[in-house]
Amino acid sequence: MITPQKINKNAAQIKSEVLSNKKVGPYHHMVFAVGEMAAHSKPGNFVAISVGGEQSALILRRAFAVYRAIDKGPMGGTIELVVAPHGQGSKWLCAQNVGEYVDLIGPLGTSFGIPTTNANTMLIGGGYGSAPLFALAEVLKNRGCRVDMVLGASTANKIYAPLEGKRSVSSLTLTTDDGTAGIHGQISEAIPRLIRELGTEVIYSCGPMGMLSAIAKIAEEFDIAHQCAVEEAMACGIGVCMTCVVPVKFNDGIKMVRTCIDGPVMDGSEIIWDRKTVLDKL
Image (cartoon, rainbow, N blue to C red; front, side, top):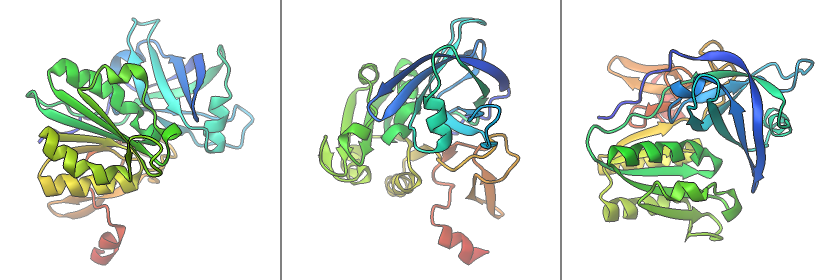
């Protein structure tokens, strides 16, 4: 089994300059100066950013998955984020101009584990949740793995699929709920056929919890290793507040695990996706 990599011990709090902020469809692609932090960031890690400004009532940080980290030395490292301006915090971040600074902690959380052999891998992403998978695709390709990517969303303009990402994959399949791009239907409906056709041996997924649950069930049916980046709300990002817990199976029973510390990348087969099952056993 390929296990997620342990939490990064090099996390730091810095004032990070906004180097770029470009709107890409419904999302914002943002670049931040982070110095040597970039050298310690791996696919699956996230950063926690203080939002709203010094006088804001938004006291909790917002967690954002790292899209890409580029190490240019101690002074020149950068990280890139893909941000969807939904809530107050993310809207505030998307409104920041080049040259302004944000309070940022990172890199946080666990990262994706990489196969020790040249495995056939499938990367499955839902909406902007697919952002961490593009850097992972590059790592897997350099490792000698076959990389097949499947991206889905409710409609075409919500699929985040940059052109440079296509160069790191052997195949790219798109699905949309409304049929405006690629295969018509939910992303999980296309996975079983693709697994058979592509000989998939390892699945990596990132996206809404409902999608991750469906993928976990499929991976279990095919007896395939499955690592998923869990999307639970993270209020602190450092394991203090206990708002991001998920139920996980252990030999001695069920335990509530903090996804900001023991995740966000977790073994999909160990998570109890049906919360009713947990309540029945308590």
